[in-house]
Length: 247
Image 1 (cartoon, rainbow, N blue to C red):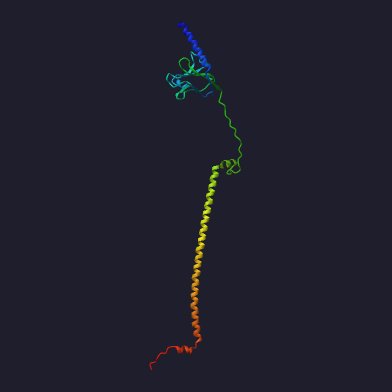
Image 2: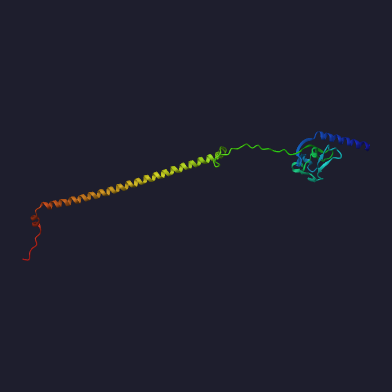
């Protein structure tokens, strides 16, 4: 009875492995000779503490070719050109292969060790002979005769909405300053004219008063002189007071 159970169990596990492999997810990774690649393998949250590995080839149920694997409870491993890092908070482990060769190309399997049948993700690694060279096309540029003269492209890039806005603000400020200075100058000129007019009126009034007074005195004096000239000399002497003599 026990002898019959062992082959039956093997057949069941083999069928489960075939079913798991047939329904596995496929990942394609490209690399170049001498370079390195990273293979990201996701898994379920409840498998965070399980053992993870990368299997090369057909990855049969028994005698798997595990090129790299973690130990029980561990989250990282390193073996030659292979390294494995289990990021449990993201439920993903990353396998890095360095110094690639053409022989590294082929099929791989990301595996999570669990009871019954392991979980698999199929990986197809493609390795090329050399990395492609990236060529950049440069267009010819014309050089201006005057090195200091701006080119149309520099003018186009130098003019931006912010520069236009700042220019507009600066011109508006200049206009305000010019108008203010003009108003102040006009007020000063008007004030000076008013003061000058008031001073001239005051000097005119004073000179007019002096002229009137001088004319009155001169007229009185002229009348006295004329009266004296018209009277005879004897009458003038007669009207003088006499001084009594000692006799």
